[in-house]
Amino acid sequence: MMEVKVYPDLIRKLLPMREERGAYAVKTGKAYRTNREIKILDTFFILKALTTTGKIKNYKTRKDELSKACKISWSTFQSRIKELETKELISIQNKSIVCTGWRKLIDLYDFDPKYEYVVKYDEDNKAQKLYFHFMDVEIEDNCRSQKEQFLKKFADNPHRDFLLQRLVATAVATEQQLINDEALLRKALGMLQRERFVNGTNRNDQIFSLNPFVGRSVATLRIDYGFKSNRSVTYTRRKIAATGIRQFAKPLPEVSEKRCHVS
Image (cartoon, rainbow, N blue to C red; front, side):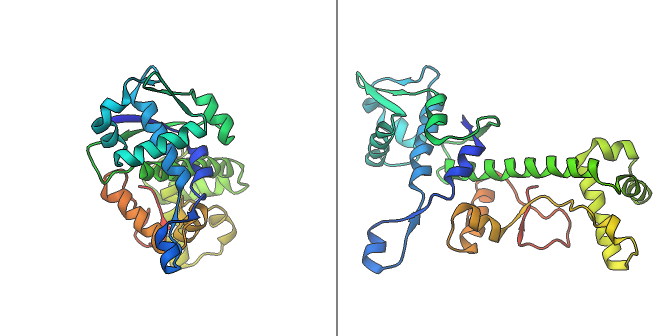
């Protein structure tokens, strides 16, 4: 198991950069869309994770190890190396690959390195591509941001005290427990809203003044990631779940499956 550092703001910039290419598109007229930039940088991140010194010595004698780690053929690996050299993210010195520091990557793609994640990348699992980890990190970071916004909006909500009173009355929790536990607070508010939606209430403005659900619709993810159809998002989400990176779930049984919620 390898630990790979990933920056969600960089991934957010890269994911929509899909382009139409390939002999299949030329031959059939059907556009085959791929994200070349992601594929190149996925190799760079793995190379950085393989060394603590920034140098991989005599790399041509380590074909099997490097191909296995990147999960690509040796010819594809060499092609990626050339593109990384063009971007000046690596250099070849005395038969060794020398990786640049993170500062060069930040300057090249102009992203905010404030948040970083370390993912557990299984080089022995052929189905677990680093690309899926990239998407997972972006989804997780987006959820983190949504949760922060929820807490800020809840604190500033003019109906905060009324909502806390109703939640304490209906949830098995004290006011302090709700304030200290963001997940419990969102769950309790979501269940209160569902119950009031079913049974009716004359306090809609207060009870429905805040959305407790965290997630993005499949359609929104399609736009954010530059996919052609919603089916591509659904397929990728299933691949992330199938490879054991993350499971997706609905926060409440009645919530639409069209929402992509992180469990």
